[in-house]
Length: 138
Length: 108
Length: 126
Image (cartoon, chains in turn green, orange, blue):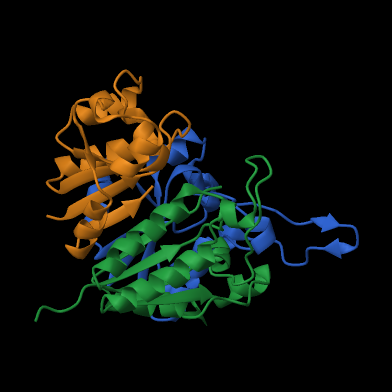
């Protein structure tokens, strides 16, 4: 049996700020469907992506209530991807940079997300088949 | 030699840095590497036929493979028959394929 | 696994963070045993300029006591065994001459980047 593919991603963008986040999650979703083992290091603003206190809201401009609007919550997307990976025989180890979490006060994260440090990122990258850093921009 | 995947997410009309990125792709190719530029987000705006972007046109004159995320194209209303010659629409799966294949992937 | 960290974004949140967060993570990964080098491109080449002073920021009674010292932090990588390169053309475009730069910064021409990259197992663009 061929060895399982392992990928590491470093993300930096905060939720709702940039299309890079969605594309990053799309890439991770592809890896999850393939049953890869994925590590995500959520650095800086990305530490808020998995914040479990994100809340949906209605959209009066479009006349939609909360349910109709069904506003995306990155934390729910992440939880769904973690499940997707498991269903397909893979894993997603989502690591929030701890200091980034502290600065932003986003300590509560969805299940399956853990706190870590740059050393975890380095260790994951060293042990992965490949690593993609998705930078943020000023 | 190595395989490179240069992911360009920046808008060539907004970012002065897109030009040097395309030049890097050409330089890597000239150095004997396999190079693909993968356009995503506003990076695909340069791929609409009729768009005027000298740096991008210069890139298309090289043998660098240029792909564009089909979702980003559709999101911006760039139909397949309006994609400039030399750019191929591609699913994002290509990026994961190349990562799994050990390609050096750099996101701009 | 020899890795080249390319830094392009300049002065993004450096005051709030009191650091450039990529220079910072480079230090942190080095401490964790990583074999790293740094390449500055675009306006991040300005990090190599000596004489930067971000002190004095205050909001009401809240004063910043540890302003970022990005040039020093960058320079501190070199004795730790992290070479620091800067793209020559990007320096020249910004009027930065050799004498303006922190000691130990190595200049590399854009056209020589493929050769530089070839010396690393991984190349990460931050």
